[in-house]
Length: 305
Image 1: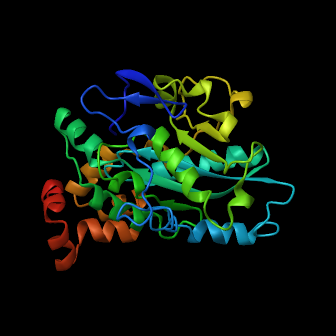
Image 2 (image 1 turned 120 degrees about the vertical axis):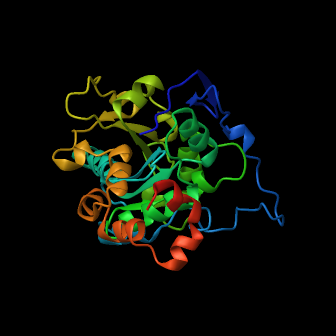
Image 3 (image 1 turned 45 degrees about the horizontal axis):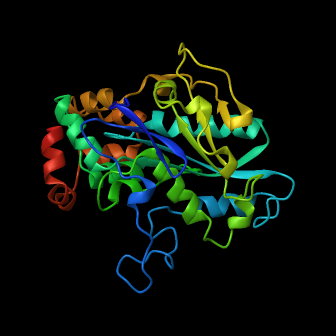
């Protein structure tokens, strides 16, 4: 998988972010406020229009105690970012591992999103590594098909479809929090400091390189859940900074990678791709319809399927 080793650290809207030397990320200051009545006005749009589907989260809230009221339990949502080139069950399971750790700490997770990264980050990085770089639209399509039967995890498209420089993960987290703060159910999602409670889930390398064990914005109810692989060197949780460490995933899902998936695609191994993503995603990738192949001609050519 394509990682995000930092060349520098910057402070964007109070959060630490990793910046690639080869590409410049958008910060919170780069996202200008919407002008009412203009084409860029997003303030009146539901979060679905901003790239954050809500049906699964709303179903979870309705099933929880009180539905629109969190009652005695805190509620939260979780998001993870990455190239997802393509997505696989390991990305999805990372969110479930994070949710399990939060729920062990009496924080009820009602929503989770995989957020495939912007082409402005993915394409230059893939070229530098001489590997396949699938388009944002294609990666989103595969991701949606991969999580369609998952009751918790959905696909966030705000990051991948953002117009301008690629937004790094702190900005993605901030925009998700802002979007959810505008929905009718926002009060059910508020953390101890009165903001919608969002946790960023990531692996150990990303957490170490981006200094996430020190937290993101705990004062604004933004936290971190580090999800290690078996055998990873991992630091202790830091609850004061809203930083927690989950248990690693087990079984076949723990060994998955996007590189492995691309290899299985070239081998046309339908069963392996189905296990790594979903049967629907495998059908789309290995047996696309004429319409699907025409829509994503360049991506299918890159995959040689």
